[in-house]
Amino acid sequence: MIVNDQMKVVSHEKIAKNIFELVLHGELVNQIKAPGQFVHVKVGTGIDPLLRRPISIAAHNQEEQSMTLIYRAEGKGTKLLSLVDIGETVDILGPLGNGFTVEEGESKTALLVGGGIGVPPLYGLSKSLIAKGWEVKHILGFQDRSVSFYKERFEELGETFIATVDGSLGTKGFVTDVIQKEAPGFDEYFSCGPTPMLKALQSRLEMKSGFISLEERMGCGIGACFACVCHKQDDPDGYSYVKVCSDGPVFPAGVVQL
Ligand code: FES
Image (cartoon, rainbow, N blue to C red; front, side, top):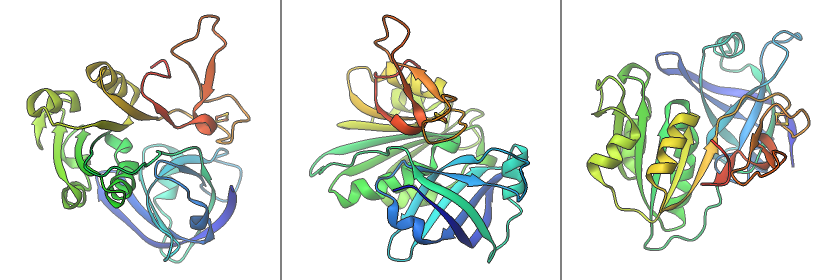
């Protein structure tokens, strides 16, 4: 069930250049069904900025009714959000979308591949996969060291490779360069990040089954405005589309045109 909750800020920290970790407390957490779901965050008090901002859920703890959001403060809305203090409340709508399906994975290995602000939902996913018996490996891609985060947290969960475009941390290049160099063995892959990264990854891992989570510009977040429409791969007449917000954001690899 989607709820609108005034969630209390438990902690709010800058964890990298322009990257913030926001921990919120509230009953909305009871509704979270799967890693990879997101919430719509209202920033500011008036009608400006008008739209809510979609932010993926990095992790949640049902017992403590807390959830962690990690976001990049780059536009007007997210910069306003970065000013919110501990003890204040934030207007949150969610949980939204369909997350990753986590099946039993005894003796299976998952490769989790994230890019930039697509990395956060993979943290909660990694924990869920481990709880279901999977072994996990991670490849995290960032522009450079200054915007990298959660390296140690992922390392605590499983083998972790980092790629940075300028080579300031880990392998110089992209996540696909790590795959080429390290050739990590795995059964299924799970990925979230910018579309060019997902496209490159999907073609590189063509023979593997996987799931990708799309980062799409959103309006309503609930399937009503068509702002997030993407065409399906199999779209002979141009009318076969999905709405990333309500049909996704997670799709099996190969289903959506990237
Ligand atoms: Fe409105 Fe997806 S954001 S339909």
